Length: 414
Image 1 (cartoon, rainbow, N blue to C red):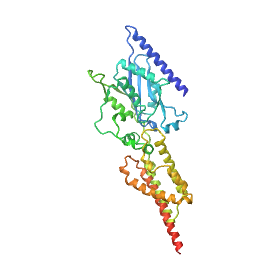
Image 2 (cartoon, one colour):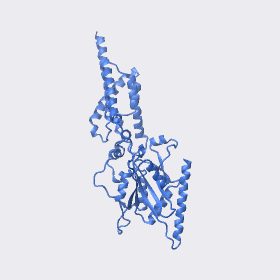
Image 3 (tube, rainbow, N blue to C red):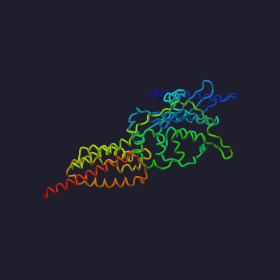
Image 4 (cartoon, rainbow, N blue to C red):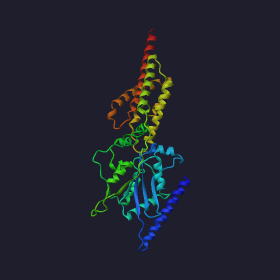
């Protein structure tokens, strides 16, 4: 990491030196300043989970022989940083702005077979210089780190904001005519080929993900940002003519076979696995009822799994600072209280509490299933059989309890 930091600092110093040379040239009569070309780079998705949404970066090229060609990349992070997993879970992930040589940047996406588009921005020399200087200031060690937010502050929104800042927020986007998707629908469009990722997102993120996006919010995705820039115009003053934000677009790399993660077989999808799990639990439950036996070991394992999942959901809702994790209506069926049930079933003195809990759970989850489509949150289809698992286990406990009571009563009468 230190080596990378030194390299980046070296890039910054070279860039600053080049900028000083430009300013020195401008001060001499008869010498024209170098022209800077600023472009928005849009990279297609890759095969890794963190590559599914693509990537955005800004390219600044000095158009003269031997001139520099840098890429300003807001997608840098250090996975080996102390406490990375904990901070990621809490929503306190820090990303930073890095500077790469353009050939190295492009080679990385060629290697993973991802398409790379370049949109050359229609900026004046003064605007290009101002944007370059702003990026250099942003790349300084004391400024380069930022608190990453997947939906609202990421590698796509940061370059957009920098361009807008230099243009005094005079960029005008062409709003789409059709209704915009919700955040969840937009995420599904990017990551739909990875059903387990969608399952995890649907479990972790709550009803805030189900409101319609604004067009500006939709630009968190590099693909939409590229389209927005291609149709955007800039009008610096009411008296001036509007000009396109993008002067030209080039495809820098277009693979014959674009990178794509392998398709998940249907028998390994969350929905299939969840239904398989449900039928297994149903078979165990039917057997238990027929034998008038309630397996405490089975339910301890089962409820512990649900309880641990509930701990994650509650942590994301009440501790994490991730966006749209609260409220999460999945907490009605996936909550930490299942851990108590996993423990209480072993104490005879708590039998009445366990019975009341299962009665309330049975009734409450049936109501939850009945109101499934009216709850203001879109649930993953795989959640349905997982909820029914809890319903059938509560029913099993109640049914076995009733049958045992009848058996004891018949013995007493005899």
